[in-house]
Figure (cartoon, rainbow, N blue to C red):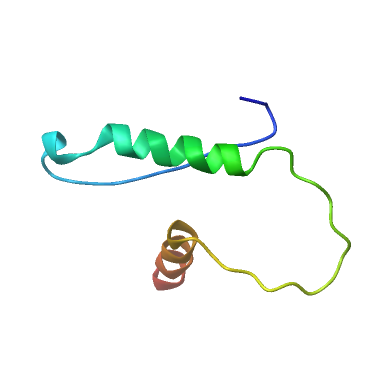
Length: 64
């Protein structure tokens, strides 16, 4: 894995045995692999599609 990417996954459950840690790891790795070798783009207006984690974070922050 290169130093120019990152991955993230999260989950919660009161019962630790119900957390699928392997699936979370696969999700984080897949995200890191897709974000490798970013490139610059020209300034401008671009459509943005937010991942569920980003949407939840924004809504949580607005609700705070």
